[in-house]
Length: 266
Image (cartoon, rainbow, N blue to C red; front, side, top):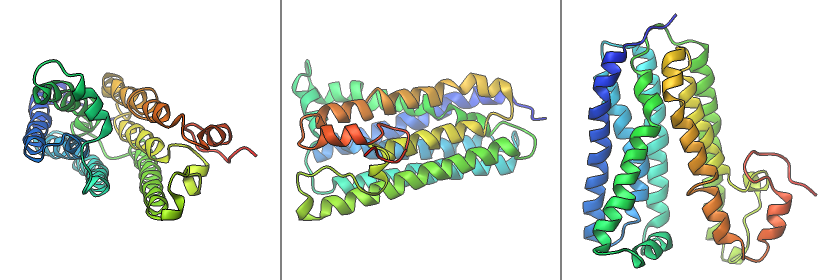
């Protein structure tokens, strides 16, 4: 049976929030210097990695060391891989069209508007979504079945993300595919293998906390919120609205699962 130090967990919430805020403010400074705010997408993964590291340090002497290390490593690996991928993908490009459209309608100073509506919002989301990562460090008792099940689901998610991103990058690099819809490999089984991968990663990290019912209930909002963002918020729904008029997308949507992987319809 695992115990949980609610007091220590509560004391760590503010420093973790401060870490997420520091990452976003530093990234805002970089965005001002470069003249593009798409750099905030790189900071998304970095923010989770930094919060995981801060939580790992703060929870020393409170929770099981094996679980503390496990959740910190899994979060950092996911976050830094994602940050590296987005940084490489955006190299040499100008502003993201999403941010261009938003800032064109900004009241007052567009940079300050971006600070409020993009950087600070994403910092708050990093802190809130990472609550299971923060809580896991304060669980006592040895690493058990819940943690290993979570690590296995995390691995499935990372595989979908990494392989899906690599397949898409190779597809786009071929000039013969210009204007075509990517419908090969994992993209034949789900229209969003990268978002499905994120979904698995964060439900997997949540499972690590499920060894103790109290912390699990207190942090359930985190994977639920991430799922909403991936499926109905700024992920799948937004991207598909953007792609709706592209030639071939309607047929691709008809034969390919929108999220959960399955064999394509004939």
